[in-house]
Length: 531
Image (cartoon, rainbow, N blue to C red; front, side):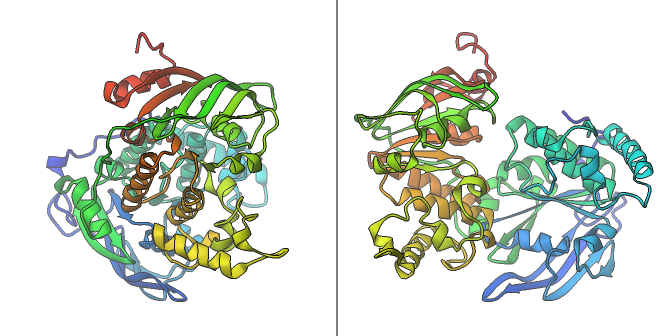
């Protein structure tokens, strides 16, 4: 855990919003006034005004496409506002580049890290800020600065470690160190826990407390209401490009924030009838995956999934669930046996096309690496793996009009924003990219559906929608394998739960007969009897 460097004020002892301890007016750390931004026909930010107090943690939430990331990209200089004003510590500034933002004490940690994986931590931190002609002197000063940051904030990372060898949590720590090394007083965290394990997320929020105690201002962009309630002092809600509410976290609740985000009441828990399992649609026996270095990543996993049930996999990231999904989807070779609706499949000769012919479809965990081709139009990404479908062909050529019509219908059904099939996949927000992938696989009428991290980076309204779709598919007789790092998602959706640790199944539970504590012990490798 990150040590807290000073005690933060208890909720009951907080000063009034916008005022100091002596009740005098407080100069905002950052203030946005009437920010406007358009991208062609898309009105991303509409007259946004926002005030963020110094030495606070300020949350910004909203549905995918609400404009929150665009707004922060304007603050960090990736975009320039069409109109409006930015003030830093009361003074108007013009930010036209990230270098301008850094010069005004603004740092940003992006959801997808901006690191060179083949370089060391130290080299990444000083990249672009080497300190003059004498690189050795710059490295010496940077090494001392990193040691000081480690002492002050608990941000200890081996400066000589290769970034690509670090865990995701440590890579994020390097990004934060980079921002602080460059003098950031205002730190923007964009969906910071989307790629973290629960324990890594807890450590991150201990760090935000330490930063706040040292006088830093943290802006937290997230769709997870639990994080907002746990980590922030105030929260601003955006909807369709506008700021619709700014609330004191201590005086609000998740239901009120969710309603402000979506514009209607939102079900925060999924409702479902008891499962009615039918015949076995997926039968896995002694499935074993070994990586290129000879390390066993999945060790003799055996289970069945029947028609009309959801099997959830509970595991900390890196404990074999990714290899399990990839082996079942025909993306990597494995030993053992797999049977799809009674048809044997040889896992040692992976064939994703043959598996799709058996109506086994796959929503990958990483939409950027496996789910989309980012330079492709959304309509093109929307048929990946299914491009041989006769509906999408005109002789030897692809029928672009048919592909566009199909994607348009899926966008409307899944509320993808903006609903533009011709827009590049890279131009959509993360949650809308996820909807494109989900629609592609879920609308194919699968018999077996493998789902990895279905709501990663997805807003609260879309989570409700996706959960209802998954339950509807179960009720329609589909067999679903669900992998998620969100334990509450596993608990609420699954009919049975298997825990993995170190690639081995450590136990199986019914959601009604277990809790997050017991599952956490199983995920940590504690024997089932002790758990």
